Image (cartoon, rainbow, N blue to C red; front, side):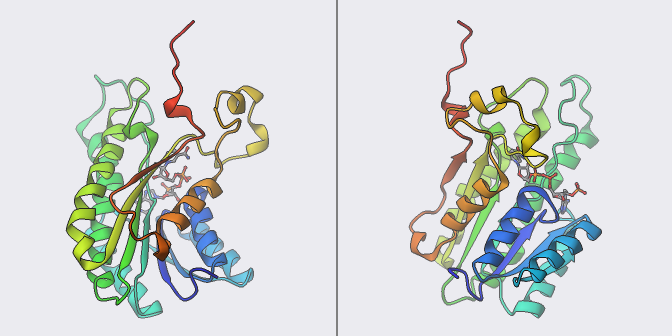
Length: 251
Ligand code: NDP
């Protein structure tokens, strides 16, 4: 019950990695707000957490829309009285791969507005409340190892995740005096579908011997927001089973 009575917002929490993060904080006693575009699935995940004895509420929110983010933070304060932790997990990779020559300005804007601007808006509004806390606050952005390395034709997603990494060090410096830590996680391949369907080669190519699970990212969040780890700020934690440090020159 490390996070008993902490008020935690997780964006993109209806499913996938965000849902696992929300469950993990709830299991540690936190009061969790799940924010997402997906209303039915978000309500279901929140219900599920409550039926397991956790405290959770779903709030519909598009993180790229300023007025919805302002409302999200206001409603969180209304429900839980504070904001202690924010996990910026909502993100899109659509189009996952589009020829660099065909990528449109609108596609670029959509990815940047969700992934990068979304992190900025939620952080700005949450930090206004966190700075009123005696014990400060903690923000974690979910970037991607694609901020550090690329497959061809993934420019919009890579740039948006790189922006999140830079936002991390800028915010850590700005918000340090207000007692707010800001860190970022670079996940590698985290399987959010049926893990049993993965092939042996999928696991074996990882130095850690397996593909990642949403809980791997949830544990990293719990570590980075733990009050005993407040000396860690402006950091980027790669959670990828060793893939980004593996040399892949053809023999
Ligand atoms: P999912 O697509 O499974 O879940 C993301 C959730 O965020 C969805 O429910 C999605 O709703 C929601 N969302 C999308 N846009 C918005 C928005 N504007 N406002 C609010 N919610 C929104 O993704 P994952 O769980 O796989 O990934 C979570 C995060 O981790 C993302 O930021 C992703 O980029 C990052 N990541 C994931 C990796 C992986 O291997 N899974 C690897 C590296 C990074 P909807 O379905 O309607 O879009």
